[in-house]
Picture 1 (spheres, rainbow, N blue to C red):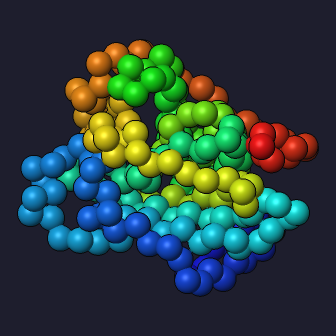
Picture 2 (tube, one colour):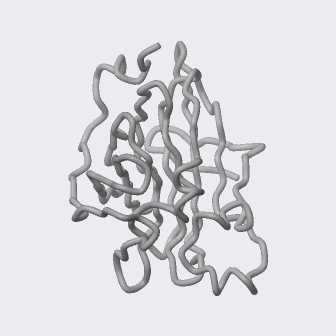
Length: 201
């Protein structure tokens, strides 16, 4: 598999593949899931390059729908206050994040991004990526090698507090408190200093 970057052409090998059945606990369309066949939802190529303690990964999300829901990553939270820097290489993306206690959410945000845009994932947030387009989404991220991920909240409540469907954003009824979804703008250039990615130990 190959990805064309602005400055280079990357040959990618040995991805970690997230299959549909790996995501059963976080999907909206459970009725569709009962008869759906297993398939690859997205691909993660870890450690394409490294800089000090930071790792550069590439993720590819094809445009295949998950029933009525647009394709997405499973979603997780970074432990120890780690942040993540993401850029879109191809296609378009919605970067969703939420903060709260269990199923009572205080803040829910989404960043709409296209090729060349940059996003910083807020610390201590549960977050995921959605491909809302009809073409594949290719994105890259810088993240600390020491960062660990926790998938438990989205697994417990069947995904984030909002789903993105063909009909638009829909609230997840498994949450007791869901705030209004706020729209945020992406960064137009890469931050010059990446020290914020090293987290707190």
